[in-house]
Length: 185
Image 1 (cartoon, helix red, strand yellow):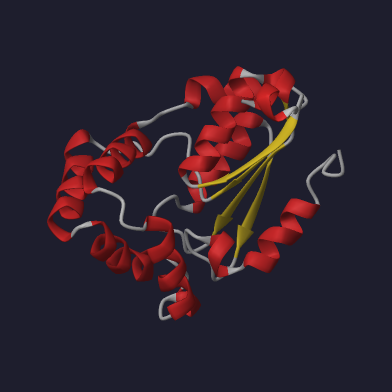
Image 2: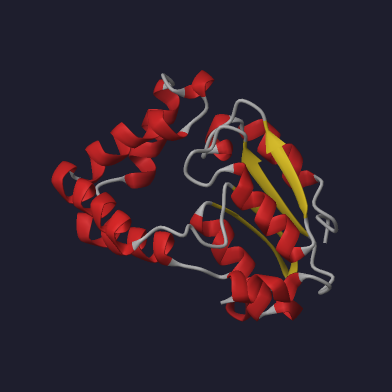
């Protein structure tokens, strides 16, 4: 895809599963990646298949829209739990996606474990910055600490923020991204 877009090397950034995918891509294609920044991500949740099945069952029972509407107040920082703006943004992001599609994404996201790949980034010269909300119940700070430790990267913990820093504190996220080494390249 990078070739079709005319890009030789890129900065990767992702939230939650997007951060996990960014780390995996950097480990698999290090010559194409300038840096990685993750937000509320993990190298692997460690959840059992039974726990994942229970989440999928809840999704199927509630439907996509209600599932995410109920989920948002549980995963954001306390100051953002009643935010109509966040609810609206998540409704747009979740959209009217079919439950079967979201279920497949959930199984892949919560079942993935990329620890074996992530270690390849230590000593690669690719800076990895793991950012996490102090109040993230989905991918708590310990998971971002693990990303930073295994990749020899850095860690930032955002006080009062949950799992969606890009929605909870977008200005702070933009500031972090502006400090990425080589960001002007």
